[in-house]
Image 1 (cartoon, one colour):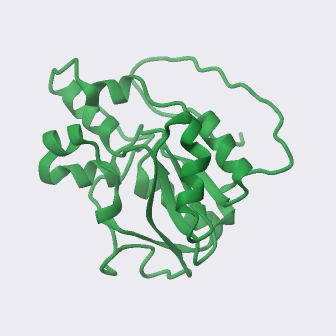
Image 2 (tube, rainbow, N blue to C red):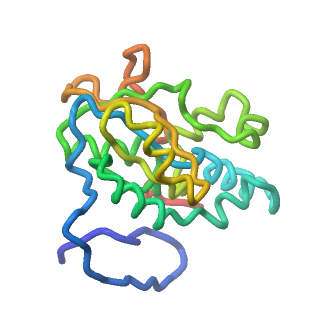
Amino acid sequence: MVLVGGNLSSAAQVSVTVTVLGEAGSRLLRRDAARPGQDLYVTGTLGDAAAGVALLEAGKRRGKLVAAYRKPPLRCEAACLLNDSGLVRAMIDLSDGLLQDLRHVCRASEVSAMIDRSLLPLSRSLRRWGGREALGYALGGGDDYELLFSARAGSEDTLREALAPLSCEVHRIGKILRYDAQAGIIDERGEVLEFDQEGYRHFERRG
């Protein structure tokens, strides 16, 4: 059969999911519209949900990080406002982790990207709990369900104004580059960003 994406995974339990289909307007934010020179942005903070999973696996049941996993943000209105701004070019939600989902955008748009690690938005809870590992959760963790998007360079203030009615933070984290098969995604020092565990793997055996 043809797989058109969605909740497809391996698990020990049987689950049933519901898919809702609808119609989109004339202006769509797709993965394949990122172009060199555009800035990269994310909403909210990164890595909290992945840290929440680690805490749950360790037997913890409460706290801000666990809550970030159990009740992720809904960014539907934010996506609509960003689309209406006319500044956003490509967009994807961060379900499988920043690096993994950014690779989807780069592959579809035939570009590379630079992430400035110093600009990644990390919550106080993640910094306090994760310490040196906090950055790894932000880059490789999944289930954030924030928005990752490219936009016209220098649009940061206008994008923040567009999301002001929702009190939704937006952070510039890097830039879209010309395609480089060797580099792929690099950091601010030009080093290739690679981690042992990059995002959620849908068919990895667990337990």
